[in-house]
Image 1 (cartoon, helix red, strand yellow):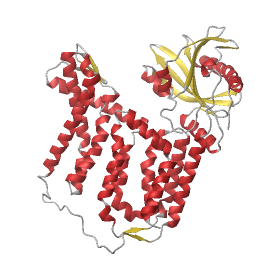
Image 2: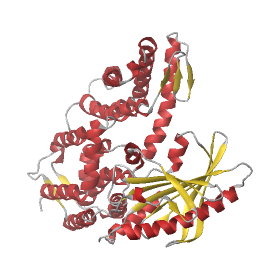
Image 3: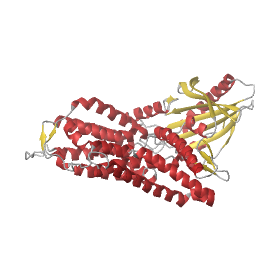
Length: 512
């Protein structure tokens, strides 16, 4: 069977099998300023592949079964990511799977010749949220301090605290969008493109790629410095709207100029006269020498059909809606009486929920518990957001985490034992006890990743379910021990869960 035909079939099946993460990628490209360049990456990779067409003469096609265990591992991870709503796994797995399928079906000889087009696809993937936050915080800190140094060098009186640049008359905050990530990854991709077209020596191509990292940081510092000067002299409007966006575009052009200058600088290093042609290959009259890959091709087709079948079967499951919505959950039960709070739509969307419920309960002893619940009626398939946990949200609101651990509550309706994450927080001198957990219709866990695994199992069994995130909070009163607060929270959880199970049973209609 012709390898070109095999490759075309596998590409179509791959796009169909992973339609969910691909559609999510497209949505990010169209809506996110940070990753809008991503839509260009597949076209650039396709051009690289076209440029390599002459090197494919006499290539040997032979399946490579040694990579099959790794391929299976990533296929399973991708299934977990898609069915368990984990875009941080399903999307980064895409370029890795492309490479592994290529090696498995067509062998290392072909991969060596087209490794650049295949590996370049990694730039179409948004950075996973955990890395985005980690790298973003690091870059914000560096950019803030270097931006402060830049402004001091120009004679401005500046104090830098964290990511805030205090100019006296005005404060300039280096937010996530100004961390430099918006420059870093497109510029790294641009460094590879520049090196491919303008350099023929490997070490110079690598240098063009590596130099984009300091260029991205320094040009971002330049942007922060210019923003500080304009804001100091003309007001805060210079750091917002059109001016902010135009500065970003202009500074990126400056980054390319710096990259071009660096490329000219490399001309001073040997070899100064570079060979521009590829080594001439003998043409035996055949484009490919196929030593056997039919079995690997068939296995790949079967794997992609399995992934696609699971995805589309699950996508056909109807949403598990609640009559009246989760916001109709009782504001009073047993000894607890509460006052519901309205949650803004933008907060619900940002939290990863479809619906939410918020209520402040008080019992007869005047003890208070604040309850928040986020509900997802379509629990499967990778989504733009997944439930955000208090481990991120509460510290970002100014609270300090004193301790975090797992706690198991006994005698809980339906589940018997309920594992929850316990956090002791401090805010403005007061201490808070926080519980949170995730639950489907018949499984509960304290961990978001285990919850995703539960969802994947439900999906594989085609067992429809909702997904819930639940977070009660209580204050630890003056003179009260943490153990006293735990006993109050445990009791509240048992009573609330009994009411919740009855509420869901009465108002849900779960269809398989």
